[in-house]
Amino acid sequence: MKWEDIGDQPCSIARTLSVLGDRWTMLILRNAFMGMRRFDDFQQNLGITRHVLSERLKRLVEHEILVKAPYFDRQERFEYRLTEKGLELYPILMAMTQWADKWMDQGQGAPVQYVHNSCGQAFQPVMVCSECKNRLHARQVKPVFTQTYFSYLPKQA
Image (cartoon, rainbow, N blue to C red; front, side, top):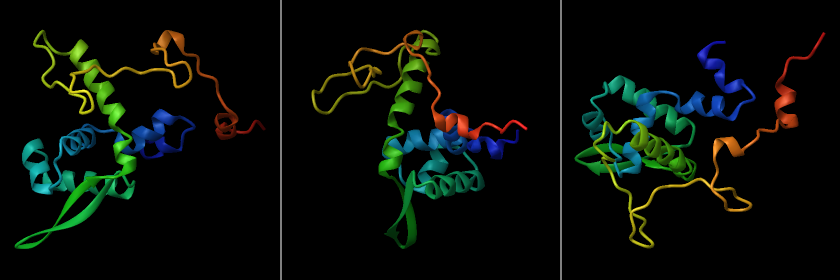
């Protein structure tokens, strides 16, 4: 299977990876969630080539994860803002952060602490069942394939 076809699979993870599946895209999103909006700021902070950054931003705009909005500073330029669809990616970044802080911190501890605006407390994100509100663990979840999955399978001759 070719990488460009990965989004056609009946798999939610593969579909997500077809849009977000490279390191630069995830780092751009990280920076967007930290309030970065301008092309030059992304480029300088990440050390990414202008060409690669332009391609990744274009893809995020095409998929309505970012919106390109004009701002004025001597000449017309644009900034990139997270859309509602983009904001929905926050749990993914928080899960990646939590995993790295646990398994890849090299004994240094977390480099960033997250504080909940409502209560003012530092927190650790948790994943809970939408129905019973208990914490989820991989060993407690069973995937059940839906008809949608089976409709993508090749038909038997």
